[in-house]
Image 1 (cartoon, rainbow, N blue to C red):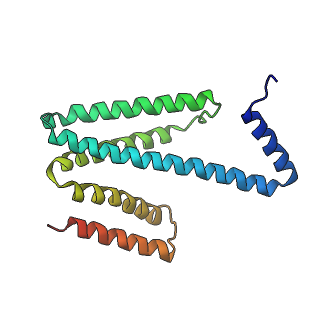
Image 2: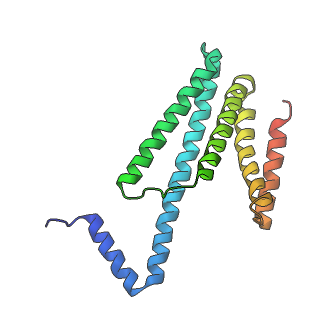
Image 3: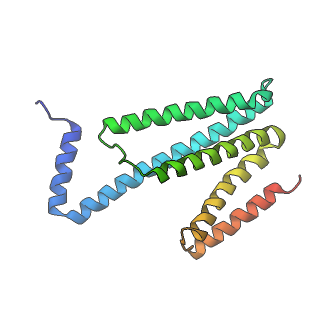
Length: 179
């Protein structure tokens, strides 16, 4: 039958469920979005770990002095992948709305900060043991994000989150101690 596919059947079922029980449909929609977000976060985590391994390999290779070329290649590859992902989303009808110029300035500042952080991480990967560099830099990003959330975005931590932050600070301190 033309126009009949598993996707169209699921969409029809969801429309019916939303009309019968809007709360249940909203919960399913939120669960699906949460699942997609979780998949994106896991993918980012794996990509970040992979980048760390590649940084370490590059710094241990005969080409360790070519850090600049290595980083430019990595940044251009990341930009190309991001552009392809944005094009795919646009084809699916999920194009981002136009942004104010301040958003682009902020994005450029974040990109510059990420470039500096990756440069430092690549250089440190060649100097320090992996058991120190990667846990400290990764937990450090989490702690810095937490600090920004609390100090600038005025978010409040629960007791559990505050305890986790304390453990993170302790972990960074312990990993940073000389062996």
